[in-house]
Length: 156
Image (cartoon, rainbow, N blue to C red; front, side):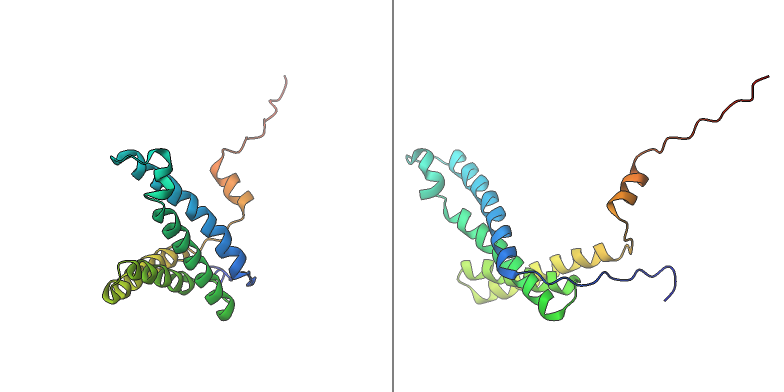
């Protein structure tokens, strides 16, 4: 192996359920924010509870998409014992399929699978093209200026 190639770190298996719950909760918060915006911009007589009663489906949909994506990505990574762009593509495909099923159309589900899976897989693949594996400390040192040592002037 040449010096320019970067060896991949050892694979660490993760719990798909724990990861899906964590990401599902985060995506649910994003869905809550979007539901609040939908509720604030809409004209209705539901008041503040409209976030849950009128546009609350947005919250559940975002949570379900996030959890589906992360569960599938982690499950595929555990089965393959590797971390690469194919895991993200599989997770994106599952989440895109779920989005298409919401519209009650199999062609939309397959299109969502291809579109979201390709986008996330491409994004993950582009991130691995750089080939840099710096630690946080190395990145920090490279980002901030390093103080130069003071040079002593000879006294005459």
